[in-house]
Amino acid sequence: MKVPSSMLIAVGASTGGTEATLQILRDLPENIPGIVITQHMPEGFTKMYADRLDKLCRMEVREAKDGDIISPGLALIAPGGDLQMKVLRDGSHYRVGLFPGEKISGHRPSVDVLFHSVAETAGQRGVGIILTGMGRDGAQGLLHMRQKGAYTIGQDKDSSVVYGMPMVAHQIGAVCVQAPCQNIAGLLMAYLRKNLPPEI
Image 1 (cartoon, helix red, strand yellow):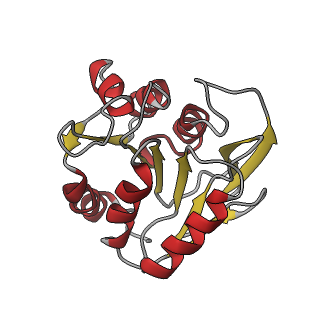
Image 2 (cartoon, helix red, strand yellow):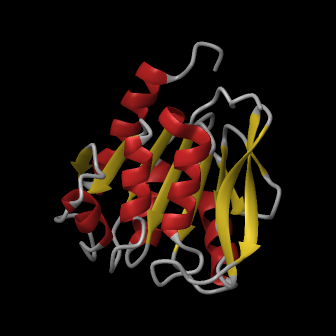
C-alpha cells in the first residue's frame, strides 16, 4: 500500500482545550496539512464546536464522519459519544475510521487511540500536539508517535488550564518541545516549512 506523501497533524485536548485549540487553529493558514482532533466533549457538543471553529478559522473545520478523507485545509474533530476515532491509510490518502469501543485512558473518544493510529499510519510524517487537560490520555500515544519519528509539541504549564495530559507526556519523554499555547502555531509552521515534501 502506498504511504501518503502529505503530513498529518493530530491534536489532543481536554479541560481548557476548546479555547487552546481555537487559539492554535486561528493562527494557521488555509492550506495547512490535514488535521485530526480529539477533544474530550459530550455527544452533540463536538458538532457545535466544529461549526464554531469553522467560522473563526481559515481552514474548513467539521465533525468527523466515518470514512472522511483527511486532506489539506481540513480539520476533523472526533464526535463525542460512543465512538473512538483513528486514522487509517487508504492508498495515497489518510482517512478517518470511527468505531464502537471501550473507553481508553478513561475516555471515548480517546486521544491515545488517535495518536497511536497516527504513529502507525503517518510515522515521521506525523505531528502530534497535546494540550491542556486532566489525567494522562494521549501521553502514551504521543510517545508512540515520537518513537516513530513524529514531531511532538506539548503545551507548557503556565498556559495550561490543567497541566495534566501535557505534564505526563513531558515526564515520559513524549514531547520534543514544550511551548506556551500562543507559540504552538508558529512552532508548527516553522517545522512544516522545513519538512514538507517537495510535491506539497
